[in-house]
Image (cartoon, rainbow, N blue to C red; front, side, top):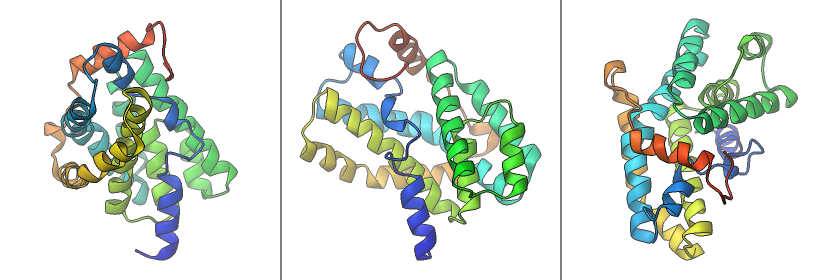
Length: 226
C-alpha cells in the first residue's frame, strides 16, 4: 500500500476520529450489567461471538459491498445497501448509533473538502447516512485498498469493544492489549469471510444482542450512549 493511502487509513479508521465511536458499547454495557461479561475470558468470548456471528455476517459484508459500489459510482447499489443496513438496525439504540456516526463522518468528509461534486451530492441527497455508507465513501475518496479498509474497520470495532472491557470489567491495560493481540487471526478470518459470503447467506440474526441493546436503552446507570 502506498504511504498516503496507509496514512489515510490510519486516520479514518481510528477510534479517535471525532465521530463518536468511543461513546457506544453496542450492547456490551448491558451484558456487563447482566453479568454475562465479567472477566477477561467472558469478554473474549463475547467479542468473538459478536465478531463472527454478527459483524462478519452482516456489517462487514455490507461494508464490503458498499466500498465496491462507491468505487464504481453505482449509486443505486449505494442506496440499496444503505437502506438495507439501516433497516437491519433492530433497536432504537443501534439505529441512532449508525445514523449519528454516519452523519458525523459525512460532515467531516465535506468539511475537509475530500469529496468531489458527485460523491458529495450522493451523500447529501440521502435522507439518512449509515456509518458503513460514509466509511465506504471515505475509502473511495482517499483511494484506500478495500481489503485493508475492511481489516481496519474490523480492528477498530474490536478495539472499541476491548476498550469498553478495559474501562468497565475492568481489565488492565496490558490485559486489553493481550486480548487485542489474541484477536488478530480471528479478525483476519472475519475479513476473509466477509469478502466471500453470498448475499443470501448474510444475516444480522442476533436476538440476544438486540434484547441487550433494548435493555441498555433504559438501563438506570450507564457510561455509553443510548
